[in-house]
Length: 399
Image (cartoon, rainbow, N blue to C red; front, top):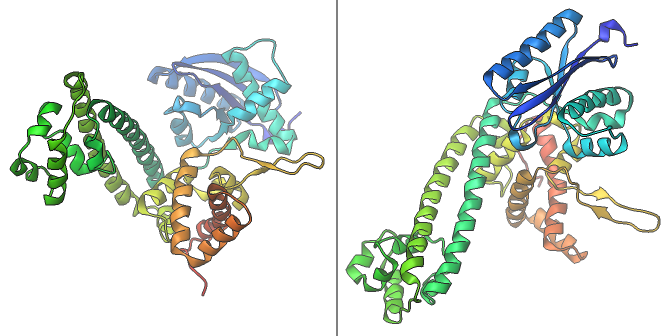
Protein backbone atom coordinates (compact mmCIF):
# COMPACT_ATOMS: atom_id res chain seq x y z
CA UNK A 1 0.00 0.00 0.00
CA UNK A 2 1.36 3.41 -0.97
CA UNK A 3 2.00 5.84 1.85
CA UNK A 4 -0.89 8.36 1.99
CA UNK A 5 1.65 11.19 1.99
CA UNK A 6 2.82 10.14 -1.49
CA UNK A 7 -0.68 9.33 -2.74
CA UNK A 8 -1.25 10.69 -6.24
CA UNK A 9 -4.36 10.98 -8.36
CA UNK A 10 -3.61 9.64 -11.83
CA UNK A 11 -5.60 10.25 -14.98
CA UNK A 12 -5.20 8.24 -18.19
CA UNK A 13 -6.66 9.70 -21.38
CA UNK A 14 -7.07 7.73 -24.61
CA UNK A 15 -7.24 10.49 -27.20
CA UNK A 16 -9.60 10.37 -30.16
CA UNK A 17 -10.50 12.82 -32.89
CA UNK A 18 -14.05 13.46 -31.57
CA UNK A 19 -14.10 12.11 -28.02
CA UNK A 20 -11.65 11.00 -25.36
CA UNK A 21 -11.86 8.07 -22.95
CA UNK A 22 -10.77 8.89 -19.39
CA UNK A 23 -9.79 6.62 -16.50
CA UNK A 24 -9.10 8.02 -13.02
CA UNK A 25 -7.17 6.05 -10.41
CA UNK A 26 -4.81 6.36 -7.48
CA UNK A 27 -1.13 5.56 -7.22
CA UNK A 28 -2.02 2.55 -5.03
CA UNK A 29 -3.49 0.90 -8.13
CA UNK A 30 -7.19 1.41 -7.38
CA UNK A 31 -9.50 2.49 -10.22
CA UNK A 32 -11.93 5.25 -9.22
CA UNK A 33 -14.02 5.95 -12.30
CA UNK A 34 -14.16 5.83 -16.10
CA UNK A 35 -16.05 8.07 -18.50
CA UNK A 36 -15.93 9.62 -21.96
CA UNK A 37 -15.89 13.31 -22.89
CA UNK A 38 -16.55 14.96 -26.26
CA UNK A 39 -13.85 17.14 -27.78
CA UNK A 40 -15.82 20.29 -27.01
CA UNK A 41 -15.83 22.99 -24.36
CA UNK A 42 -18.51 21.21 -22.30
CA UNK A 43 -16.45 18.02 -22.43
CA UNK A 44 -13.40 19.84 -21.10
CA UNK A 45 -15.48 21.35 -18.28
CA UNK A 46 -16.77 17.89 -17.31
CA UNK A 47 -13.24 16.49 -17.39
CA UNK A 48 -11.81 19.10 -15.01
CA UNK A 49 -14.85 19.04 -12.73
CA UNK A 50 -14.64 15.27 -12.19
CA UNK A 51 -10.86 15.19 -11.82
CA UNK A 52 -10.87 18.11 -9.36
CA UNK A 53 -13.64 16.47 -7.34
CA UNK A 54 -11.59 13.28 -7.02
CA UNK A 55 -8.47 15.27 -6.14
CA UNK A 56 -10.30 17.09 -3.33
CA UNK A 57 -11.85 13.87 -2.05
CA UNK A 58 -8.49 12.12 -1.77
CA UNK A 59 -6.37 15.23 -1.08
CA UNK A 60 -3.89 14.13 -3.73
CA UNK A 61 -1.91 15.96 -6.42
CA UNK A 62 -2.88 15.25 -10.02
CA UNK A 63 -0.84 13.67 -12.83
CA UNK A 64 -2.34 13.28 -16.31
CA UNK A 65 -1.03 11.03 -19.10
CA UNK A 66 -2.33 11.26 -22.65
CA UNK A 67 -1.28 10.62 -26.22
CA UNK A 68 -0.10 13.64 -28.16
CA UNK A 69 -0.10 11.88 -31.55
CA UNK A 70 -1.68 13.76 -34.51
CA UNK A 71 -2.46 16.80 -32.36
CA UNK A 72 -5.98 15.66 -31.40
CA UNK A 73 -5.16 16.30 -27.75
CA UNK A 74 -5.03 20.07 -28.23
CA UNK A 75 -6.17 22.22 -26.44
CA UNK A 76 -6.75 19.80 -23.55
CA UNK A 77 -3.01 19.44 -22.92
CA UNK A 78 -2.47 23.19 -22.53
CA UNK A 79 -5.50 23.44 -20.21
CA UNK A 80 -3.98 20.71 -18.01
CA UNK A 81 -0.66 22.55 -17.89
CA UNK A 82 -2.43 25.81 -17.05
CA UNK A 83 -3.78 24.19 -13.86
CA UNK A 84 -0.28 23.28 -12.74
CA UNK A 85 -0.86 19.52 -12.96
CA UNK A 86 1.87 17.13 -14.06
CA UNK A 87 1.40 16.19 -17.71
CA UNK A 88 2.92 13.11 -19.31
CA UNK A 89 3.01 12.24 -22.99
CA UNK A 90 2.46 8.56 -23.78
CA UNK A 91 5.06 7.21 -26.18
CA UNK A 92 2.83 5.52 -28.77
CA UNK A 93 5.51 3.14 -30.00
CA UNK A 94 6.31 1.86 -26.50
CA UNK A 95 2.62 1.75 -25.57
CA UNK A 96 2.06 -0.60 -28.52
CA UNK A 97 4.89 -2.83 -27.32
CA UNK A 98 3.42 -2.78 -23.79
CA UNK A 99 0.06 -3.93 -25.16
CA UNK A 100 1.78 -6.77 -27.00
CA UNK A 101 3.53 -7.97 -23.84
CA UNK A 102 0.51 -7.50 -21.56
CA UNK A 103 -2.48 -7.91 -23.89
CA UNK A 104 -6.01 -7.14 -22.76
CA UNK A 105 -9.01 -9.34 -23.41
CA UNK A 106 -10.21 -6.92 -26.07
CA UNK A 107 -9.37 -3.60 -27.71
CA UNK A 108 -11.37 -0.51 -26.85
CA UNK A 109 -10.75 3.12 -25.90
CA UNK A 110 -11.76 2.40 -22.30
CA UNK A 111 -9.26 -0.45 -22.05
CA UNK A 112 -6.53 1.76 -23.55
CA UNK A 113 -7.14 4.49 -20.96
CA UNK A 114 -6.85 1.84 -18.23
CA UNK A 115 -3.58 0.66 -19.79
CA UNK A 116 -2.25 4.19 -19.38
CA UNK A 117 -2.91 3.96 -15.64
CA UNK A 118 -1.02 0.64 -15.64
CA UNK A 119 1.92 2.43 -17.26
CA UNK A 120 2.01 4.74 -14.24
CA UNK A 121 2.29 1.67 -12.00
CA UNK A 122 5.01 0.17 -14.16
CA UNK A 123 6.91 3.45 -14.10
CA UNK A 124 6.94 3.40 -10.28
CA UNK A 125 8.57 -0.03 -10.04
CA UNK A 126 10.63 -0.35 -13.23
CA UNK A 127 13.06 2.52 -13.98
CA UNK A 128 13.42 1.41 -17.62
CA UNK A 129 9.71 2.10 -18.11
CA UNK A 130 10.22 5.78 -17.35
CA UNK A 131 10.61 6.61 -21.04
CA UNK A 132 7.14 5.23 -21.81
CA UNK A 133 5.61 8.20 -20.00
CA UNK A 134 7.55 11.35 -20.80
CA UNK A 135 6.82 14.37 -18.66
CA UNK A 136 5.86 17.42 -20.68
CA UNK A 137 8.00 20.30 -19.49
CA UNK A 138 6.92 23.92 -19.60
CA UNK A 139 8.42 25.67 -22.62
CA UNK A 140 8.85 29.39 -23.28
CA UNK A 141 5.91 30.83 -25.17
CA UNK A 142 8.13 32.19 -27.95
CA UNK A 143 9.34 28.66 -28.70
CA UNK A 144 5.75 27.42 -28.82
CA UNK A 145 5.01 30.15 -31.36
CA UNK A 146 8.10 29.20 -33.39
CA UNK A 147 6.95 25.59 -33.39
CA UNK A 148 3.57 26.52 -34.85
CA UNK A 149 5.05 28.91 -37.42
CA UNK A 150 7.84 26.57 -38.55
CA UNK A 151 5.49 23.61 -38.93
CA UNK A 152 3.12 25.75 -40.98
CA UNK A 153 6.05 26.86 -43.13
CA UNK A 154 7.19 23.26 -43.60
CA UNK A 155 3.73 22.25 -44.84
CA UNK A 156 3.71 25.10 -47.34
CA UNK A 157 7.23 24.25 -48.54
CA UNK A 158 6.19 20.63 -49.09
CA UNK A 159 3.09 21.74 -50.96
CA UNK A 160 5.20 24.04 -53.14
CA UNK A 161 7.43 21.10 -54.02
CA UNK A 162 4.48 18.90 -54.97
CA UNK A 163 2.88 21.59 -57.14
CA UNK A 164 6.23 22.37 -58.80
CA UNK A 165 6.73 18.71 -59.70
CA UNK A 166 3.27 18.51 -61.24
CA UNK A 167 3.89 21.78 -63.11
CA UNK A 168 7.15 20.52 -64.55
CA UNK A 169 5.56 17.26 -65.73
CA UNK A 170 2.67 19.10 -67.40
CA UNK A 171 5.01 21.56 -69.13
CA UNK A 172 7.11 18.73 -70.53
CA UNK A 173 4.00 17.03 -71.89
CA UNK A 174 2.18 20.09 -73.27
CA UNK A 175 4.92 22.39 -74.56
CA UNK A 176 8.27 20.59 -74.89
CA UNK A 177 11.16 23.04 -75.02
CA UNK A 178 9.66 25.70 -72.79
CA UNK A 179 11.51 24.38 -69.74
CA UNK A 180 14.82 24.69 -71.60
CA UNK A 181 14.82 28.46 -71.04
CA UNK A 182 15.10 27.95 -67.27
CA UNK A 183 16.99 25.61 -64.99
CA UNK A 184 14.32 25.73 -62.28
CA UNK A 185 10.58 25.66 -62.83
CA UNK A 186 10.21 27.58 -59.56
CA UNK A 187 12.17 30.63 -60.78
CA UNK A 188 10.19 33.77 -59.99
CA UNK A 189 10.60 35.35 -63.43
CA UNK A 190 9.52 32.11 -65.14
CA UNK A 191 6.38 31.84 -63.02
CA UNK A 192 5.59 35.48 -63.75
CA UNK A 193 5.99 34.76 -67.47
CA UNK A 194 3.65 31.75 -67.30
CA UNK A 195 0.93 33.86 -65.69
CA UNK A 196 1.43 37.13 -67.58
CA UNK A 197 -1.36 36.34 -70.09
CA UNK A 198 -4.68 34.56 -69.71
CA UNK A 199 -4.18 31.42 -71.72
CA UNK A 200 -0.98 29.42 -72.19
CA UNK A 201 -1.12 29.59 -75.99
CA UNK A 202 -0.85 33.38 -75.90
CA UNK A 203 2.67 33.18 -74.46
CA UNK A 204 4.22 32.58 -77.89
CA UNK A 205 2.79 35.91 -79.10
CA UNK A 206 3.99 38.19 -76.31
CA UNK A 207 6.11 40.95 -77.84
CA UNK A 208 9.49 41.99 -76.47
CA UNK A 209 8.12 45.20 -74.98
CA UNK A 210 5.53 43.15 -73.11
CA UNK A 211 8.15 40.69 -71.91
CA UNK A 212 10.30 43.44 -70.43
CA UNK A 213 7.32 44.61 -68.37
CA UNK A 214 7.03 41.23 -66.65
CA UNK A 215 8.67 41.39 -63.17
CA UNK A 216 12.07 39.70 -63.12
CA UNK A 217 12.50 39.49 -66.90
CA UNK A 218 15.40 41.51 -68.28
CA UNK A 219 17.03 41.55 -71.67
CA UNK A 220 18.81 38.20 -71.11
CA UNK A 221 15.64 36.27 -70.28
CA UNK A 222 13.66 38.16 -72.93
CA UNK A 223 16.15 36.92 -75.56
CA UNK A 224 15.75 33.34 -74.30
CA UNK A 225 11.95 33.57 -74.39
CA UNK A 226 11.93 35.01 -77.91
CA UNK A 227 14.22 32.20 -79.08
CA UNK A 228 11.68 29.74 -77.68
CA UNK A 229 8.78 31.59 -79.34
CA UNK A 230 10.35 31.03 -82.76
CA UNK A 231 10.22 27.25 -82.28
CA UNK A 232 7.25 26.98 -79.87
CA UNK A 233 5.24 23.78 -80.03
CA UNK A 234 2.02 22.95 -78.15
CA UNK A 235 0.36 19.57 -77.83
CA UNK A 236 -3.27 18.99 -78.84
CA UNK A 237 -4.52 19.23 -75.24
CA UNK A 238 -2.70 22.51 -74.55
CA UNK A 239 -5.92 24.51 -74.30
CA UNK A 240 -7.19 22.19 -71.54
CA UNK A 241 -4.00 21.55 -69.59
CA UNK A 242 -2.77 25.12 -70.14
CA UNK A 243 -5.30 26.43 -67.62
CA UNK A 244 -4.07 23.89 -65.07
CA UNK A 245 -0.46 24.91 -65.70
CA UNK A 246 -1.24 28.58 -65.12
CA UNK A 247 -3.23 27.75 -61.99
CA UNK A 248 -0.28 25.77 -60.62
CA UNK A 249 2.12 28.60 -61.46
CA UNK A 250 -0.16 31.09 -59.68
CA UNK A 251 -0.37 28.77 -56.68
CA UNK A 252 3.42 28.54 -56.44
CA UNK A 253 3.67 32.33 -56.53
CA UNK A 254 1.09 32.54 -53.75
CA UNK A 255 2.96 29.94 -51.69
CA UNK A 256 6.22 31.83 -52.13
CA UNK A 257 4.61 34.96 -50.67
CA UNK A 258 3.10 33.05 -47.73
CA UNK A 259 6.40 31.29 -46.97
CA UNK A 260 8.29 34.59 -47.09
CA UNK A 261 5.77 36.19 -44.71
CA UNK A 262 6.11 33.25 -42.29
CA UNK A 263 9.92 33.47 -42.38
CA UNK A 264 9.78 37.17 -41.56
CA UNK A 265 7.41 36.46 -38.66
CA UNK A 266 9.68 33.64 -37.43
CA UNK A 267 12.69 35.98 -37.51
CA UNK A 268 10.85 38.50 -35.33
CA UNK A 269 9.78 35.89 -32.77
CA UNK A 270 13.24 34.28 -32.76
CA UNK A 271 14.75 37.52 -31.44
CA UNK A 272 13.17 36.79 -28.05
CA UNK A 273 14.12 33.07 -28.04
CA UNK A 274 17.37 32.27 -26.25
CA UNK A 275 17.62 28.85 -27.94
CA UNK A 276 17.19 30.35 -31.42
CA UNK A 277 19.77 33.03 -30.63
CA UNK A 278 22.34 30.53 -29.41
CA UNK A 279 21.81 28.21 -32.38
CA UNK A 280 22.08 31.13 -34.79
CA UNK A 281 25.59 31.78 -33.45
CA UNK A 282 26.74 28.47 -34.99
CA UNK A 283 28.18 29.06 -38.50
CA UNK A 284 25.83 27.62 -41.11
CA UNK A 285 22.75 27.71 -38.87
CA UNK A 286 20.55 30.24 -40.62
CA UNK A 287 17.60 32.07 -39.15
CA UNK A 288 15.02 29.59 -40.49
CA UNK A 289 16.83 26.45 -39.26
CA UNK A 290 17.60 28.03 -35.89
CA UNK A 291 13.98 29.08 -35.40
CA UNK A 292 12.68 25.66 -36.49
CA UNK A 293 15.04 23.82 -34.12
CA UNK A 294 14.18 26.16 -31.25
CA UNK A 295 10.49 25.41 -31.78
CA UNK A 296 11.00 21.64 -31.89
CA UNK A 297 13.42 21.53 -28.94
CA UNK A 298 11.25 23.83 -26.82
CA UNK A 299 13.38 23.57 -23.70
CA UNK A 300 16.62 21.73 -23.01
CA UNK A 301 15.19 20.58 -19.66
CA UNK A 302 13.33 17.87 -21.58
CA UNK A 303 16.59 15.99 -22.14
CA UNK A 304 18.58 14.14 -19.49
CA UNK A 305 21.85 14.43 -21.41
CA UNK A 306 23.34 15.20 -24.80
CA UNK A 307 22.73 11.61 -25.98
CA UNK A 308 19.00 12.07 -25.43
CA UNK A 309 19.09 15.30 -27.44
CA UNK A 310 21.04 13.59 -30.23
CA UNK A 311 18.45 10.80 -30.45
CA UNK A 312 15.61 13.32 -30.59
CA UNK A 313 17.32 15.25 -33.40
CA UNK A 314 18.04 12.08 -35.37
CA UNK A 315 21.82 12.44 -35.13
CA UNK A 316 22.45 9.19 -33.23
CA UNK A 317 21.91 5.52 -33.95
CA UNK A 318 21.08 2.61 -31.69
CA UNK A 319 23.31 -0.41 -31.23
CA UNK A 320 22.00 -3.41 -33.18
CA UNK A 321 24.53 -6.15 -32.44
CA UNK A 322 23.97 -9.85 -31.91
CA UNK A 323 26.66 -12.46 -31.39
CA UNK A 324 29.53 -11.75 -33.76
CA UNK A 325 27.40 -9.38 -35.80
CA UNK A 326 28.01 -5.71 -35.11
CA UNK A 327 25.74 -3.02 -36.45
CA UNK A 328 23.49 -0.06 -35.75
CA UNK A 329 19.97 0.96 -36.61
CA UNK A 330 18.17 4.32 -36.75
CA UNK A 331 15.83 5.03 -33.83
CA UNK A 332 12.13 5.18 -34.67
CA UNK A 333 11.11 7.86 -32.17
CA UNK A 334 12.85 10.79 -33.87
CA UNK A 335 11.53 14.28 -34.51
CA UNK A 336 11.67 14.18 -38.31
CA UNK A 337 11.21 17.95 -38.66
CA UNK A 338 14.14 18.67 -36.35
CA UNK A 339 16.24 16.02 -38.11
CA UNK A 340 15.63 17.63 -41.52
CA UNK A 341 16.59 21.06 -40.15
CA UNK A 342 19.74 19.62 -38.51
CA UNK A 343 20.86 17.81 -41.67
CA UNK A 344 20.49 20.99 -43.71
CA UNK A 345 22.23 23.18 -41.13
CA UNK A 346 25.10 20.75 -40.47
CA UNK A 347 25.83 20.47 -44.20
CA UNK A 348 26.14 24.27 -44.40
CA UNK A 349 28.12 24.39 -41.17
CA UNK A 350 30.89 22.07 -42.34
CA UNK A 351 31.48 24.22 -45.44
CA UNK A 352 32.13 27.28 -43.24
CA UNK A 353 34.23 25.76 -40.45
CA UNK A 354 37.55 24.15 -41.49
CA UNK A 355 37.66 21.86 -38.43
CA UNK A 356 34.21 20.49 -39.24
CA UNK A 357 35.08 20.08 -42.91
CA UNK A 358 38.16 18.05 -41.97
CA UNK A 359 36.06 15.87 -39.67
CA UNK A 360 33.54 15.33 -42.49
CA UNK A 361 36.31 14.43 -44.95
CA UNK A 362 37.83 11.97 -42.46
CA UNK A 363 34.48 10.20 -42.12
CA UNK A 364 34.13 10.04 -45.91
CA UNK A 365 37.64 8.55 -46.12
CA UNK A 366 36.50 5.87 -43.67
CA UNK A 367 33.91 4.79 -46.23
CA UNK A 368 30.84 6.59 -44.91
CA UNK A 369 28.31 8.02 -47.34
CA UNK A 370 27.50 11.74 -47.40
CA UNK A 371 24.45 11.53 -45.13
CA UNK A 372 26.27 9.22 -42.71
CA UNK A 373 29.19 11.64 -42.47
CA UNK A 374 26.79 14.55 -41.93
CA UNK A 375 25.04 12.66 -39.12
CA UNK A 376 28.40 11.83 -37.54
CA UNK A 377 29.30 15.52 -37.55
CA UNK A 378 25.81 16.34 -36.30
CA UNK A 379 26.30 13.91 -33.42
CA UNK A 380 29.40 15.82 -32.39
CA UNK A 381 27.55 19.14 -32.73
CA UNK A 382 24.78 17.83 -30.45
CA UNK A 383 27.34 17.66 -27.64
CA UNK A 384 28.27 21.27 -28.36
CA UNK A 385 24.64 22.39 -28.62
CA UNK A 386 23.71 20.69 -25.35
CA UNK A 387 26.50 22.52 -23.52
CA UNK A 388 25.55 25.80 -25.18
CA UNK A 389 21.92 25.50 -24.08
CA UNK A 390 22.62 24.24 -20.56
CA UNK A 391 25.37 26.80 -19.93
CA UNK A 392 23.60 29.61 -21.79
CA UNK A 393 26.51 30.63 -23.98
CA UNK A 394 26.98 31.15 -27.73
CA UNK A 395 29.08 29.08 -30.10
CA UNK A 396 32.81 29.67 -30.07
CA UNK A 397 35.58 28.24 -32.22
CA UNK A 398 38.72 27.52 -30.23
CA UNK A 399 41.89 28.84 -31.93
